[in-house]
Image (cartoon, rainbow, N blue to C red; front, side, top):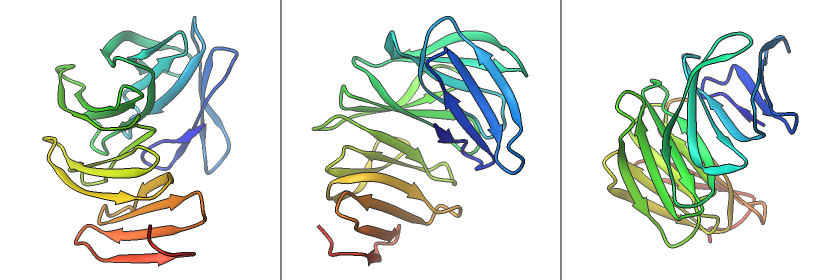
Length: 201
């Protein structure tokens, strides 16, 4: 279960091999796709033109399609990792898709060319990736550290601690991390920090 990047929809993947997309304001089921295999994770682009997903039995491959109301057309493979894919995140302009994997890599895929623009290998498995709203920064969570990179792969900064959640503010200028010991760190991209609920790791 996850929210779409524009915050308007809720995406559910089910063991019955379906992907359901609900409108948050009304609770209306907008789309209900059936697939031949169980879906591990999925994400919808902000413009609703692309649906990216990972099948549970081919969990190192990213598939992408063009969603209609009851079916997805033009299903194709976008690319691969060397191990299970853990997270997918569309850019807010709908042109790129970021992926993180247990193979310790972060990749940014161009939806037009299929080529990835950046592949950054880290010391630990990547559990979550997010692209900020201005489409210029990728945040990647490896549980004990968050890496901030620009889209050409240059490391901007890191945040330490046992991180289980990360998010950008709607304007893309503030970055938040939540830890297992109830600490929330709010960081602006200019380097100023605020802590809620505890001390910095």
